[in-house]
Image (tube, rainbow, N blue to C red; front, side):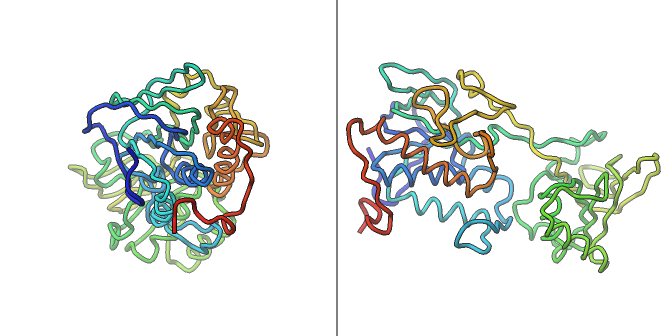
Length: 353
């Protein structure tokens, strides 16, 4: 049974197992998966969404809800959590059913219908599947430091959920990519001191962000500790007192700190998806760039998990892929029906006033 207009139904491990029948099953409730609900809904296709996390939003919600995003059309700046809120609101008129806190463990096909079985025993039958699983099951790449586990979750962190939690703290940020640079820029007005550790002077971040980082360092508002890498942690009972770093010649330097933010990327694990017979390339699913179709009939992949020549890993590109996949799926759900394409400004949102 579909939910009333705008209401979200969430199936979790606390509920008894059920069998659901829908048009499209979407694996992944990140921004691209949520927009796929909207695109399918605009073509009168119902969707169930499965995600291993306990809430919608994927990495945006789990890793950086307060991180600003600057390349969403129409939003000069929007925090990740706010973007997810807008996408959930946009999908709501199409009555999506969310199965959260569970993963897809098994996938079978019979008479043109796919059956997904989740880790809680729920079964979902669908004519098509959209895999929008981002980087799959993800976890942080941990630095090789002695006694690291004693500090994890207390004073050594791999994500920042609330910037205010670090107000007045002495923060060491380790890493050279966008996450390290973006959080350094964000925390410079909140933390007592920000120290950025990287093994070389050049960062792998957006040029504008790197330029701002250099400017702040020259103004003395933060410290660039380069070229250095993490060497040891000092403290007791999970409370960090200092981070020891070493240069390429073995010389060490002690950074007095309360918190270490380690941004060395995510370890990607496709999990059961790797056993579904899909064409894989370096842990990504190869798709047709015109339709996002995989080599398996009725299975499509969009967002970061999909790959093709010229692929750009941008949320806005994932949105486009969601639209292409939905249009490619339409004849599978509505066989023999001619799709008369109309702009949303012309037809509005089906079912809304």
